[in-house]
Length: 266
Image (tube, rainbow, N blue to C red; front, top):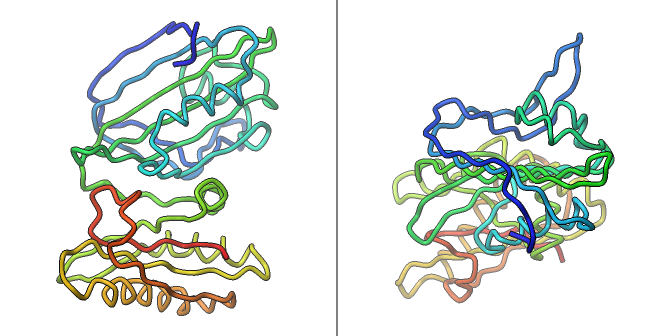
C-alpha cells in the first residue's frame, strides 16, 4: 500500500453470491440496475483504505493496479470519473460503505483477472474515490476462485484498448485442448471485433505462441493464429489482419498457458 495509508475496515470470508460488476449502475424507474454482472463463489478478502492527504484518486488507483503483475493481469472492465456513473450507487448500493460516497467526477473502478504461479485464479476489484472534503478512499476486494474460471469472463472493448495501449498487445482469452482444439467464446470474439472496427484504418497482427517441447512449434503457433483469424474473418471484419508465429520464443506473460494468441496493433 502507499506509505501512510490506513486500513479502516477489512474482512475475509467464503461467499457463494459475490456480485462481480463488469459495468456500471444506472437508475431506471427509481431503482439502481446493473450492467454486465456475474455471480461468483470463492474466498473473499475486502479492505477499505484511507489514502494519505494530497494523494489523488487517480494515483491511488494506479498504485494498487501496479501491485498486480502486468504480465499476469487481464483487465475485464474499467471506467473513469463520470463514465463510472453515480458514486452514491457504488458506495451505498454496491459496496455498502457510506465513506466511499464521493465526487462523481473523481472516481475510478476496475476489475482484473490474475493467475498466480500456483495456478490459483482471482478477481481483483479496485474502486478509488475522492470525497468532497478532499480525502481519498480505496475499496480493494479480491476473490479467489476455481482454476477453471480462468478466461471465462469477457474482456470489454474498452479494456482491450487499455491492454494494447499499456502493453502493446492483448492476449486473447481462449481454451485449448487436443480434442476440442482452440476455442474463443462468442462474446469475447465480438468484443475483439468491436475494438478492431473502432480503430479505423489500423492494421493488426495475430501473434501465435505454442509452448510445447516439439520441433514443430513455429508451425503450430502459426496454426493457432490462423484459427483465430478465421474466426474473426467469419464476422466479416474489414481491417487488415496478418498472422505471425514466434513458437515458444516469447515466454514473457505466458503464465500457465500452453497456447497463446496475441492481438497486436501495427
